[in-house]
Every structure is written in C-alpha cells, then in structure tokens.
Image (tube, rainbow, N blue to C red; front, side):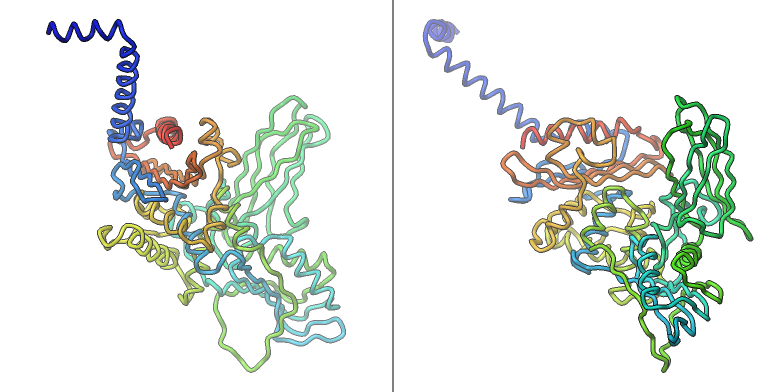
Amino acid sequence: MKLACQCFQHLNSSPLRHLLFAFLAVAYLVAINSAADAAPLPALRQLAKTAQVSALVVNLDNMQTIAAINPGKRLTPASVSKLFTTAAALRQFGPGHRFITRLTTRGSVSGGTLHGNLSLIGSGDPMLNVEDLHHLAQRLRARGIQNITGNLVINASHFGHVPCLTPDRCQAKSQSSHAYDAPLSAVGLGYGTLHATVYPGPRPGTSTHVVLHPLGMAGYRIDNRSSTHGATSHPALRAWRTTGKHQTVLHIRGQLPAGGKPVELFRSVAKPGRETAYAMNRILADAGIHVQGVARITRHRKPATQSRTITLARIKSRTLAAQLIPMLAFSNNYMADTLTLDIATAKGMRPPLTLPEAAQPLEHLGRRVRRQIFGAAAGQSAPTFASGSGLSTRNQVSARDLVALLAAMYRDSALFPAFYGALPVPRYAPEKMLKHANSAFLNRLTAKTGTLHDPVSARSLAGYMRTQNHGFLAYAVLINGTSNHPHPGFYNTVGAYESDLEHLLARH
C-alpha cells in the first residue's frame, strides 16, 4: 500500500500523470463502446418488455451483425411488405417495363363508323388514369372514327374477378371514406378511386360547387351539404361514398373559406370496371365519338375465334422504375396489390386470382433470398404473404427476412439502382413522422414505413443507412402490440426506432 502511494505521488509530480489520464480515458471509452456493442438498440430493448419487437442491423460490406433483437421472430409488417413486392416486380419485369392498354375491335371500320364493339383491354397498369383514356380516345378519333355501332366493352379478364379478402376492401363495396381501400381490377382507373373537386362559393353563406372527373361523368348522385364560410375560416370537409343496389352517392359535408383554394377529394369506388366504363363513355363523347350500344364489363377470357382482332389504339404506361417511386413514397396499396397480381399473371398463374394466391411468388422470393444471404442455417420456412401491400394482418415477416431481401438487392448490380432509388429519404418523404429526427437520420437513411392498427398496432421501418465512410447498412425494425398492451403508442414506437437508429448513424 505504501509502495502504491509512493508511485502515485511520483506520478502526481511527473509528466507520467498525463499519460495515465489519457490511458484511463481511452480505457473508459472502450468499455462504454463495448457495452454499447453488447446491447445496442436500448430504446427498442426497453420497448420489447411490453411489445413484440424484431430488429436487425447488418453491415453489407462484411455481413457483420451490428445489432439484433429477436431477428427471426415473424410479426405483422404492414406496408413494409411493399419492399418484397418492389423487388419481385423488378426481378420479373425489369426497371424499363411498361404496361400496355389497348382499344381493339373484331368489327370493321368504314366511312368513319366502327361496325362492331369497341373493347378497352387492360393489362394491369397500376397507374392507369383519366389522361391515358383521353390519349386513347384522341388516337381513335385520329383514325377518323366518329361512330360505334356496337357496345363499349371494358375487358378486365387479365386478372378476372379479384374478391375482397380484407375487412377494409369488403366494407368499401358498400361505403368508403378513404382511398386506400380501393378494390382491384386490371382496368382500374386512378388507383381505383373517384376524383372530385370541391370549389368554395363566391361569398359566405353560399353553397360549394362539386365537379367529378372527367367533367360530366355519369353514374353518381352528389349529396353536397357543404357551405362557404368567411375568408378567415379553416377548410373542413368530410366526404364518403355509398353504393346501394340502384345508386351510388358521393356525400360531402363541412365548409370552405370564401376565396380559398378548391379541395381535391379521392374516395375508393365500389366497382372499378364500371367506373372506367363511366369515364370512357364521357371521354369518347368529348372526343366526338358516339357509342350506339351500351357499356358493359367482362372479366372472362373468350376463346379465340376466326375473326381477327384489330388494335385501334394503344398507350404505354410509365416505366416500372418510375411507378415504384410514388408507390413506396405514398405507400399506395392499390398499386402494390395490382403489381402482385401482375407478377402472378406473368408467372403463368391463371385468372381469376385471389391476392393470397398471387402473393405466393413473394413467399418464394423471401425463402430464396434468406437462404442466399444467411445460408441453410436460416431454416426452410418462408415469410407469409396474403397481399403485396401489407394491408392484410396475415402477412408475417421477420427482421431477418427483410434484411436478407435488402442484402440480396444490394448485391444485384443490375436492379439495385432502381430498387434503392425508389426508397424514400426521410427529408423528402411525405410522412411527417420521419421529419423530427436529426440530420443524419433525415439524409443518410432510406426508409419504408408501415402502420396498421387492428387488432393490435403494427409499426415497422426498413431500408438502408449510409455510413460515414460511404458504406451501406441494411436495417429492419418491426413492432407489434400484444394482447396485454395492444397499442404501444405512436411516440413510444417511432421515438424508439428513431433514437436507436440515430445512435447507430453517429457510430457508423
């Protein structure tokens, strides 16, 4: 003891004191970092005491695990499922693929008259819109056609009838206050939604004015009880669509300020084929083309006959790579599930298709990439998909499944640019919940989010992180409520993964 005291007295009176302090400081930092490495993701670990958590972060340069919490536990992923849909679509079609929509006939054209039916043939374009129908009508008019003696046939046989299997979509057959629950069709228009614009009146106390798109489209009754208030009032509108046996009604309530901006409304339709028929009829009339027959929808493929099918007009969609950007940024369920049906059809699955059947290629992809990245030890079972959008709670995915997919796409030099480029960066993402983090989180991270609320909360996040030396980390976080704590809370879940990912970004 005396010797030790003499030594420290010597150190206090010599330059070695500075070396000792430096050594102790380094040792302290090493100990802290070692403890952090041993138990990273502290906020998520705390959350895992009352919620189900699966998380994994991997360095893609050497496949070293940076952090993990129950990485193999499969939970409801919500819209993070769309990462599998994105990867499967790119692998099936390639980034430059375009979907074709055609106007055809088996009749004949003479003297400005089409003698026969005019068929609109859908090929499952996830972004088919009113402008596309205008282009088709103008090309038909450019051929000199002004009169059609037969019917307008909306051909949705590419998928056949797609039944509703989630409560949201089934309820939307009779009523909807949203756009995300739109039913699916190979000829769905505007993401399967009705588009209306509500204009304020000229002065307070007057009614608002509602316009459907395309202008003058038939098939709807407008129940508008919204009004115009003072110029300083706040816009507040409620809108829902109801469909009964004989009538479809768009209901609008609330107020708009005088002199204010019009409000755009999108509500899911009950029958997407019929909606496309309403719109195409109106657009043909606007182009000066008269249809003598009626509009009807077919979902059945007819056997080939000896009569020759003539393509009168055709349009190409935006490229698949371009479509994936809004699909992921706005987490568009209609686009993701339509792509799921497209993939299944391209693989030879015959219509009519259900979404769980069409989602089987996503399960095969999940099994394949997990074995590719983590080897045979990763197990034989595949993640479960009942939809490509994540709208179904039957989807079951683990953080390891997601990181395997991210790693496999990272290694695919031909497809990675399109896959990575489609992922939102928090600084520019529509979701406000991602914008409260620090600068590194906002700029060095790509993130696909997912949220469901019933029967328990499901919140998820997955994507890539750029390291300070320009490398890549792949990460996935899934959080589900439990029967005892069904709803962990927005700020608890989002705050936990933001805090932990910010710390990882600071260290890497």
